[in-house]
Length: 121
Image (cartoon, rainbow, N blue to C red; front, side, top):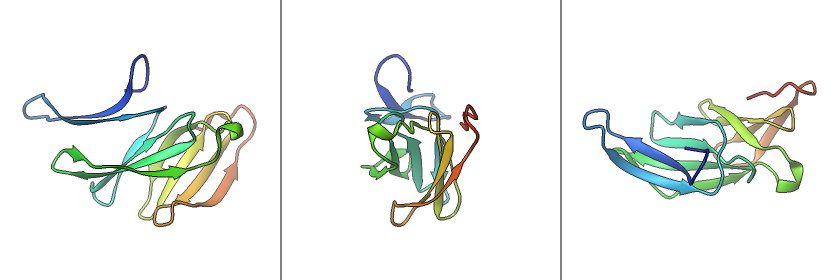
């Protein structure tokens, strides 16, 4: 949920339709993806310029690692994201670019600039 109210991730059981776990985050905007065969969940950090990587097991979210994509002054706005085996591809709503994060180090490995008004989310 990343609209009106608290921004959070909720895990719902498809068998019982009941909430199994949840985690509140300060900001989010479009984007989450499972990593490592479902053992981790990467979530957009929106205007906070972060990506949250939660441990995930048996429907429960653990304490996340927080990866910084930049500063608030960058106005990147982490939106859509996708994952490969060892990378997180992060689109910037206002920056018109994609940053490639190394999952192990959490550092920006590369950047791909798009045309203005590309809105790559």
